[in-house]
Length: 350
Picture (spheres, rainbow, N blue to C red):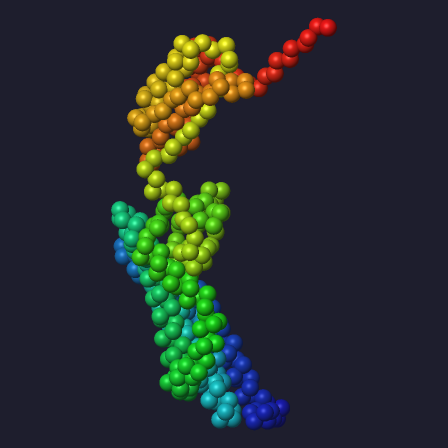
């Protein structure tokens, strides 16, 4: 018993033990709370028709556990006789952590509500403006909430917020230089939003990449390339680059050169061009403006230029495949031979 009452850094060993037991108990209570939420509260919430209570419980789970732990630690340390300086530091740290925990919960809840309710609604609408605007509003709200939380936390920590904000004017030049790229990206996103060279879902070609726009954010644009990889391009480069909007094309132009052998008669050449016209006219995804012409006498072939246009929204590769298969089948049926590089050598008898 005498050992328990020995003083160690201003507190008895018993008091240190009670404080440690309180901290340990706070972890146990937090773990129990986490288990209860996961096994009972979530189950009860799932039985209701309203989805909001499921979201609320799911988003509150981790912040509530964290708040329970830091509250338990703070109250446990209050049992000790600590210096005024340490008491002030602990109190300020506790309030700052509580503010950040509440902010964490609010931003998590906002994200979950947007993902559950707004995102499906935006996907069902016909326009693309809301698809492009939603990520910007989403990130802007979270940045605003965190900025307010930091200001409130600094105020509760005893800092003169007005003086801190005023001091930013002194280092404004250095801050502007450091944030040059951030500001450029911000203005780049504004330019994209106003000029609308593309919208979310469009296929574009920019900076050597070819893919579909998945998100236009405050800082960057996310592009999913044709091989499925996600590319993030800063908005300042997107705004300053030449952009090819593939989706906006009225139709896809396909140009083919078909070389027939030199023993093909003029009548057979006419027949070949007629077949090409027929194939294009019969396909539902090809526009009417089809061009066929006998263009060149090549080294080993008589060349026919075949130009057709695939309608907007039609499957490009499927249409090309159907046309090419039809050409191969009809030319074989008509005995029209494709040329391949040949060389005739004449030898002179001496």
